[in-house]
Length: 234
Image (cartoon, rainbow, N blue to C red):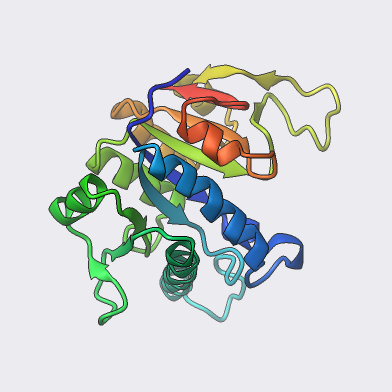
């Protein structure tokens, strides 16, 4: 069992959409909120990064410049964090949203000191807007914030229940790893997170845990150090 005092949870935008595949499925988000509150009430300090795939999937048109496409993606993550933050507040949690660029009064400009103060106060901290720069994914964004905030682990709640040696949808004999090193993940190109994020986690020794979002209480269990998936060691 891993010790979890401060964790960063990555949620995919698609996961928030549920079966609808786009927008939000409120029941799904309320279930995430319920599980997060269990852990927050137990004293775990929690940061959250959300992808933007329920609204925007990268550069889908040659008519749009890559930088502009990435900026649209960053704003999609801000929308997601504002929505999920409100659902969390409705469930009885205090929240704060930080972005690496100004968004008027909707979010606060990222500050390590302010984020640390929120963690210490038991506030759920949302890190929206990725790194604030094009050509970097939300994988890189969560790796950066995990390093900066000295998180014990990055928790990756996915549609799949762990890391496999090949795609289990294609290969029914795919082997699931209980533990695997980040070096092996990079060498075998297993794409747990993108390459930039993988190298950052390896260099700064940040472990990751991959588990199924759809398994009952999987987020709450993971935040208590009970990983029913794959632990990626650093």
